[in-house]
Amino acid sequence: MPISLEVIFVLTMVGTSGMALIRADNCASSETCLATNRMTFPWRSARLPSFIVPEHYHLNIHVDFATQTFKGQVKILIAVTKCSRFIVLHSKNLNICEAFLEAIHTQKNISLQVLQAPKNEQVAFTSNTSLEAGRKYDLTIGYTAPLSTSFSGFYKVFYTTKSGAQRMLAATHFEPTSARKAFPCFDEPHMKALFSVTVVHSQQNYAISNMPMRTSLLRADGLVEDHFLHSLKMSSYLVAFVVSDFASRSAMSTRGIKVSVFAPSEQISQTEHALHIGVKILEFFEEYFQIPYPISKLDLVAIPNFESGAMENWGLITFRETSLLYDPETSTGLNKIWVTLVTAHEIAHQWFGNLVTMAWWNDIWLNEGFASYMEFVATNHLRPEWSVVSKALKQLSLSVIVNAQPVFRSGIQSYLREHSYGNAQQDQLWQALSKVILFFTFNGQSVLLAHRGARALPHCNEPTTEKTKTRGFTAYVNHITVLQYGIPRPPDYTA
Ligand SMILES: *[C@@H]1O[C@H](CO)[C@@H](O)[C@H](O)[C@H]1NC(C)=O
Ligand SMILES: *[C@@H]1O[C@H](CO)[C@@H](O)[C@H](O)[C@H]1NC(C)=O
Ligand SMILES: [Zn+2]
Image 1 (tube, rainbow, N blue to C red):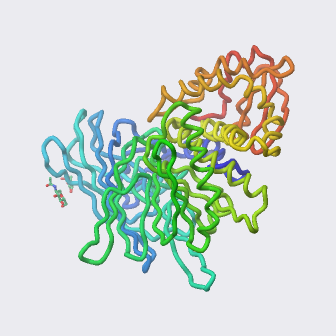
Image 2: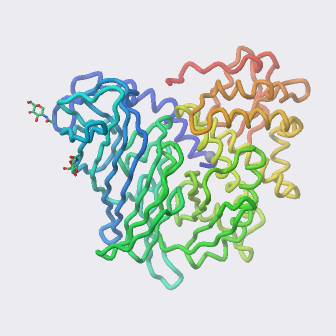
């Protein structure tokens, strides 16, 4: 997600005060412990238990544009690490109509009772038979829901063609906590798993998802069933699928990654710039991070009327039209720079955020801060003649970092390598970059770059001076000793 004031505000809420709120009333009174059917809900915390671990989701989504609803079935392979009579996961606004549990070791069905706790956006499946530690189970849940109108979860969008025809598409936006509105899931960023997505839709449309398509079947009922390859190990908030009648254009990177830009067919001529720089940026980051982009394709999709600026779903990035499309006839030079910066930001997230993810939302600035920094580095590298970009870098005192490029780069590379397909907390990043931070010297002082979302972060014993603010970044100037010992966590962090 790119930096914007709204986004930062929302994410800050989720990361700090939002959590505190949820924690304060996590079923302290007996009333909040009652599930919707007045049975006792077996779990009190807003955070999910750690003894049920999701490993692989098989998600089948059947979207019906005529009724503007969808029907889903998700089968989740779970590993149980502590004997339990219940499974708790997230679900929001889904009508659950079936659920069953199969023990992998006995191949037997275990009957389940469904309990819902809307307050914590959780659903529990309880059983009279204990699930055994060290065993694996397949939990299958069937459900239905209307397509959302809110640009989160699985939502519908309408747009109008030049001839006045109204068109509809359906797309997803899950960050931070809306995957649970599209399928029951363990919707916490550290609960990474594999996802095998299947989308069923009419012949007028087609589907794309995080991964390349495995097979597409035309069923006897006239519907199309698209099966996608199973994903990498990833967080639920990065899962995505889009069903549309869009046109697309593709180009290959030198390493053979297929980059495609999708847009309404009338706007497909405006995708040239994004396609060109998309390939270049992907190649730049592969070289910069020294880690190959791990999927064989990268899709960039322009969503009409999209509220967010863009969202970095792994392998399928969604954008507001003005953040992806560029019309040489009518757009300005600044539009072109904006498209480049946003595209670079989102592609940087494919490593920072997707490959290595923050353990919890209070560390969202890890994702946002570094993607925001890298968007300038990549853009400045590709278009050194764009003075707005190089000036922004200077304003941020980033020239200091650029001078220390080799050290910064090797710190980032080892951080990404060490935590690939896993999660990291800020302390681990400071560790990875501790040498580098000492390099951020400017006029005899250290410069710490902090994302606006993390404005409480530089909690040092010594006064900090705010130096510059731009696009969500603040540069804090400090004495070198303070930075050397890392940044203590502010007291209002809850996780
Ligand atoms: C478990 O029950 C479901 C639903 O009734 C059924 O489809 C499935 O085949 C059963 N599995 C086993 C192992 O009996
Ligand atoms: C569990 O046992 C109780 C009491 O015997 C019974 O009423 C209930 O239906 C059982 N639940 C399941 C899911 O089998
Ligand atoms: Zn972002």
